[in-house]
Length: 435
Image 1 (cartoon, helix red, strand yellow):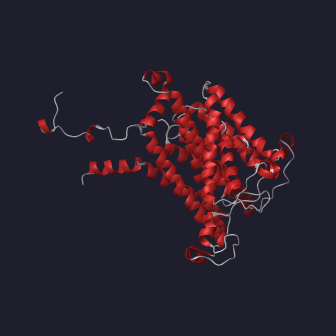
Image 2 (tube, helix red, strand yellow):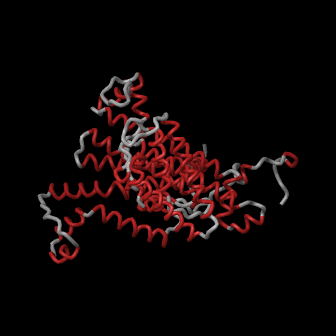
């Protein structure tokens, strides 16, 4: 193989989307492993940290892909993502939870509950889309964020406390599907394992990983598989005639209409598809996840804000960019700051530097004139500062990098390669054409 061929092969590998995502996840794992090791976490703590980062990257990736089909492909500005995630999660637990619990569920099989949650999100999306999509982008954004808040406040209402649990949320959650696979009694973590469970738990024994940790790892691997399937679905949809029409609507809806396309129908279908996937993300994250918790406060507007930041980071219009943006946001912007705070505290302790008590406010901090007081104040308010930094980052991205990491590349809509060297040779002229 010649040097030029080697360079071409290397270039093709580097540009490959799977390679980019693999390298990104590997870099994230290395970073968090190094931080965990520096903080001297026990083995199960290191594994749990890596698992949590991977899980958040995966569920954010699914939610961002769902938003990408609406905003990135079709140009529909939906700021009600959290509301549709809530519909999916609540519908699933209501359908599949124990009828004897509080609040009572219907006791249907979990697959039925998951399918019901996705369909409920689709139906609610259609209810919102039919009137809202007749409006311009700015008004669509207002309608969707209002719709999301209506959903959250309705779930929070004491009138529905016997159905949704009200402000306390739905405590009667269905059993995790992973526990059903690995344990003979899914409701008891100490019950005898199944044959598959014995194999899985045995893998964790050399590292002293508990059953809970192994169950969470298996669940996270399942979410990664779902992420891959959603990605492949949307990639296929994006290269189909349906996807090409959506991109045409995004660029110029009037031009698409002039070609005889019913743009309203395409927008409704794209909006419903995105809402269904948002419902799926809510189900995987809150209804069945390692820290399953279905309460109205999980679905506040900032969740939508986070997902938009992730999409902008990766690049609107790119499915691979959506996964990359979700992983970068979940790891570097959401999970890393609290761990870095612990790293700073440990570094100061290693050098025998004692931090004073954190001042109550900024004025007191500045007035003290003590650099250590400033550090203590910043570390004590890391969550607030993280939120402020995300807002500042969003402004900077919109101003200086609106296309994100991959949004500015050419996304071919055709299902077949269109490059010159991929065309069949002209056999009548020996493979040459007249210029």
